[in-house]
Image 1 (tube, rainbow, N blue to C red):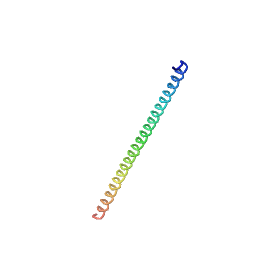
Image 2 (cartoon, rainbow, N blue to C red; image 1 turned 120 degrees about the vertical axis):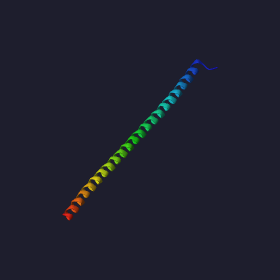
Image 3 (tube, helix red, strand yellow; image 1 turned 30 degrees about the vertical axis):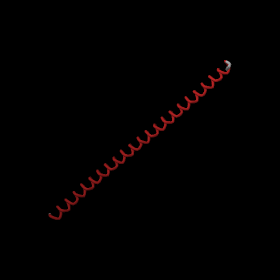
Image 4 (cartoon, one colour; image 1 turned 90 degrees about the horizontal axis):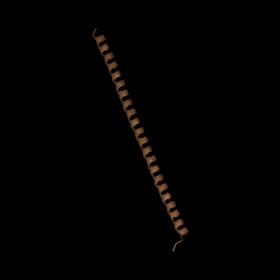
Amino acid sequence: MKSEEERGREREAERDREGERGRDQRSERERRERRDQREGEREREREERERERERERERGRDQRSEREKERGERERKEREEIFF
């Protein structure tokens, strides 16, 4: 038969093991949360880069459109000069 002292040591050891499991679970949860946060940040950065690329494409279209308009006006003036 175990003495009260032995049972006390066993209960304390069990509490220690439970505490370690709890710390391990918290640690794992915190690692998952940090990983998820990093993934979220990477996703936001990727989306921002994509938006910036789209803005650049729009600016390029606007510039091409403006250049084409200017070229068209120059060609029209040249044709008018030839006829007159």
